[in-house]
Amino acid sequence: MRTPTTRQLTVSEGEFIEQFSQQFSSTRRGARLARHLALHELNVWGIRCGTAAFEAAETIVAELAANAVTHGCVTGRDFELRIVLSRATLRIEVSDTRTERRPPGPGDLLPPRPLAESGRGLLMVEAVADRWAVIDRHPVGKTVRAELDLPARGA
Image 1 (cartoon, helix red, strand yellow):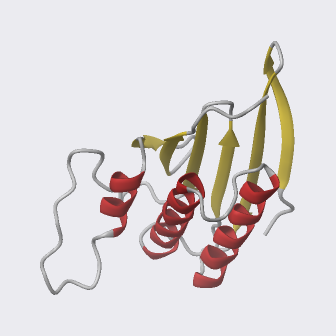
Image 2 (image 1 turned 180 degrees about the vertical axis):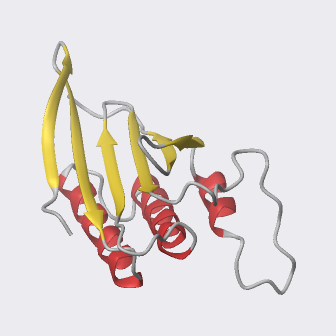
């Protein structure tokens, strides 16, 4: 696990973007740590526990991190969590290095069988995210990106 990167980037005329990025071991413990650190960072950025944005982000990070360690795990390779906050949007990205196991994208998800023990994670992401996609990661792997539109915040 590498040291997390947190920085504030200037976008344009007074608009700031907060960014958090860290790699985690492709284990259940790594997925749990990713969720805890993401929630801490959201709180620091002013997205408080109990708000719709916080709860949606919690669901997205938990599901995407769990998928990365369950379906995207490559022995000896970490997964990466990246969160970017702009004035109007919260973007959550989870990347892994497994190229051949690409999940279906938005609109292509099939509901799991009634007694299936898996297959609901991306359906949950689709339900709470305003937008999401599966994109190629360079040089290898894939990234699942989800975005939440945020309510207008005071100056």
